[in-house]
Amino acid sequence: MRALAGVSLAVREGEFFGLLGPNGAGKTTLINVIAGLVRPDSGHARVMGADVAREYRRARRLLGVVPQELVFDPFFTVRETLRLQAGYYGLRRNDAWIDEVMHHLDLTAKADANMRSLSGGMKRRVLVAQALVHKPPVIVLDEPTAGVDVELRQGLWQFVRRLNRDGHSIVLTTHYLEEAEAHCQRIAMLKDGRIAALDTTRNLLGSFSGLEVRLHLDRDGLPAGLPGRVLAADGTQFRLRLANPADLEAALARLREAGVTIREMEVHPPDLEEVFLRLTGRPS
Image (tube, rainbow, N blue to C red; front, side):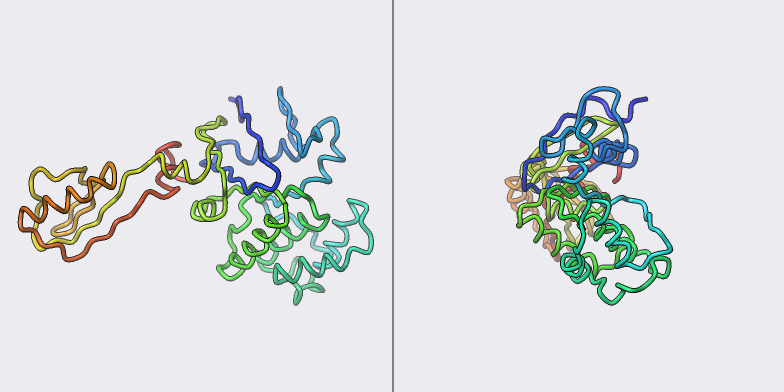
């Protein structure tokens, strides 16, 4: 079985790009190919023109990867860890940028704390800082907010959005689909190692123009001739799937004709989770 097959895509310079897919779809394998950790049987990958196999050193300098796994050295403090990471890239006297990164990731108070004493969320912040310590123009975030509290998540996204505004290309994988919907300009969805969809976030959402309508009525049962499909019914509460917004007015008109009173109504346009489930057939 192939982990990836026929995947071809290009992330534009300065783009915020989402790479989504269920577990086992090939996301992490693709990231490992880009990072030079896995060599593909065929094809090639480039980071800003640098081939990850033939020009590994240059490609790696251009790339910062936040891995999914919590990998750390327990014998160093946070500051020592970041200085050591900077040294891998030949950077000396980089403390001003290290201080700035720690500040934005709320790590300043933990600068002299040993890595093994940190919580899981704090260790993940350090992983993000390590990926940014050499100021790479391309940043890959593999599940960056997994196990992270809400406050840090908000601060992290503010910092990442700022990096993107400053021209950094961001590639994001996440199981929090609302994050991808909020931040990514384009999204590729993987399924079984292949691209199931690749388009702008707006176009992907627009490709599923249906609505879900939740109704609380004054009686049991729906009148005949109501457009759409009933997803669920519980006494006087109903969930309907309508093919398009025009059907909403037709449904309301039919309810009025039947003398039905609407006590409550919620209209939910399609979100990225719905698109994801339809294209991949599996939860994230």
